[in-house]
Length: 240
Image (tube, rainbow, N blue to C red; front, side, top):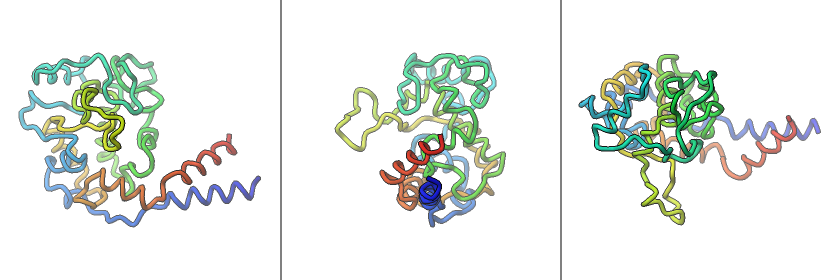
């Protein structure tokens, strides 16, 4: 069993090697916070200077201020989690050990087990989506990526901007999904702070820092697919 384990572990390690994708400082990819928020996330977010009409990715108030923003924009804060990937179906409270994404503890679309730590969050969607593919980020920069992940996973209001709503979703169309968002207005000052924290950190330079394009290229270069998933499953079985 030991030789087989070595072979399998070597196979997994082989596909996990960083792809040959160019990396550049974020300030060279994004001239300002506007480009960072809008380009990095492929149009999921929009840089909004009218702060009364913009959502925040982090807050310290007891009540979620994004609910008021939704009302301001003529939307009703949902009692359903419209985004569907690792999300719940209905927002609700989380246990006392829910600390990483603590602003949403009382009403979250995420579960403690999926957002228990930055490392757990970064592993959720596969190695191609890791934000540290160009090297370890500074603590100040990484914190903004964690906050964005908490916001996406936990805030019910994010589901109001699902790219393909239940009405439009076509399960037979391979381009459709229930996890992607589009055009959600984000506070300009939040985007600017994110840029200031990350301007010297390295990020994938494809399509001027488009995280979606980068993830697709990393997935291709890593050799992800059936074989990779199979090997991981076998290794997991042997190491239980």
